[in-house]
Image (cartoon, rainbow over all chains, first blue to last red; front, side, top):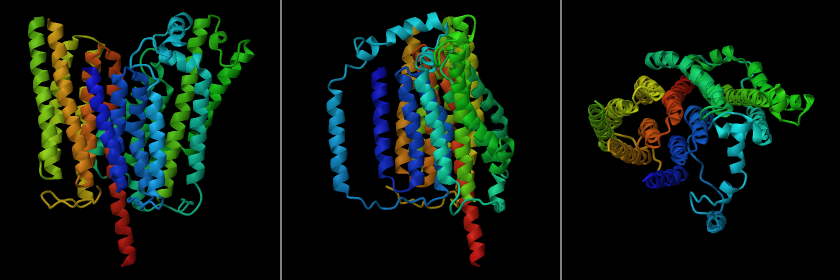
Amino acid sequence: MTVLFGIFLLTLLLITAVAIVRARNLFVAVMLMGIASLLIAASFLLLDAADVALTEAAVGAGVSTVLFLSALSITSERERASSSRPLISLAVVTAAALIVIYSTFDKPRFGDPEAPVHSHVSPWYIEKTEEYMEIPNMVTAVLGSFRGYDTLGEVFVVLVAGIGVLFLLSGGPGFDSGKSPPPWAKAGLRHYLIPRVAGRLLIPFILLLGLYIQFHGEYGPGGGFQAGAIIAAAVILYALLEGEQNALKVLPRPVLIGLMAGGAILYGAVGVLGILMGGNFLDYSVLAADSVKGQQRGILLIEAGVGMTVTGVLLSIFHSFAARRR
Amino acid sequence: MAMLLDIASWILLTLGGFAVLVGGIGTLRMPDLYTRMHAASVTDSVGAILVISGIMLQAGLSLATIKLGLILLFLLLTSPTASNALAAAALVAGTRPGARQRDDGSA
Amino acid sequence: MAEQRAEFMYYAVTLATLVTMGLAVVRAILGPTLYDRVLAMNMFGTKTVLLLAVVAFLFGRPDFLDLVLTYALINFIGVFAVLEFFRIRAARRQDSGEAGR
């Protein structure tokens, strides 16, 4: 029965994806992307992947629609007719699709216990998480400690992506060069009473949820990536309600840049601290007298770093879009 | 007692599922935006209340029930607000209730 | 016996929610106005909240509720962004209209 639900969701996802490609109006495409994100999160959850589903939820529901609409408001709503050769693209896509479909024939059946993914390193992770770290969420253990290098790389990818977007959006024609913005840009949704009152009421709860997800990641689904996106969503909500300028007063640009870089530096510093205290890079066991305590402390610190970087990057991107809009 | 709770949650879940379905059909069949919003709000309010309280009865007294209560509370706060914001957006852009619909020209 | 009955009800509610999600997708694709699509997206979000809450209990995994809580709290931000988008567009049109006069 659950498999049927999954197939139904995937069919809806396919229909939505085709509709996104066919939509000529980009606003429509953004709305359909929102639906696609919800469908993907639901499918992840049906496959029992709560951590990934939570990431999709935090980014897809709070941040990506806002960023897409910010991008739309500095460009045209209508997609220009493509000038490329459709036949060549069709041939390339068909060939790639055939290769991908052919490669799936070699894959093990869905849920096969003998599949390589279940018989290679996974049993070791499952066995050792309890022994080394004594935390119930294995995803956090794998992400933060066993494969800490990968996560360090991801944090730097996020940081580099943020820097890239800032480079693309600041400067050039249309950039806000100190001239005072028109009055409508400052107001936000201040004149819409019901959204404003309800929104302001909810901001503290969203922040609280973000902190809960951040620090509860070792016990339930969650961690720095999700928490960073949720906290960024709370600040973006404040910016929408009170005007983007006022949000900049709460968290000015230098603070955001500091969060971006500081998170990545914190992660790296934890790694170096491991070397200084006589272990390997990103080996947290040496961070405390008891190796289990050390592991837990290390995971807590690097998750904080991840959360800082993600919050800083998402908010910087949001503000640089808003700066161009004026 | 357990039997009674079971029957109560059974009724709540059935009615909730019914409300959700009715709202969904209404969203598809109603003639213009504002009437469709009425139908959608049936699923958001009545449907959510019935389904979530049905599950709460099944969960008994536990952390899950508290979380469900919070979810219901936040849903009841956010979804009418979102509907209000949507109606305001439609009004700002000049859609009037009962007016003939403009197609946005996307297919 | 009671357990099985509850499970049957969960399946029924899940089915009703899934069908409504399908209807919302149809509404999102048909439109016809932009706001119908926003409405469909917003309704789809609430339906996802209900679906995931039921699925969490169907699977016996109450920790999934954190995800549901996240959706219940932040899914409406998108609609606020839509309102802001149209407000700015209307204000800009007014600005350029006055400049042209």
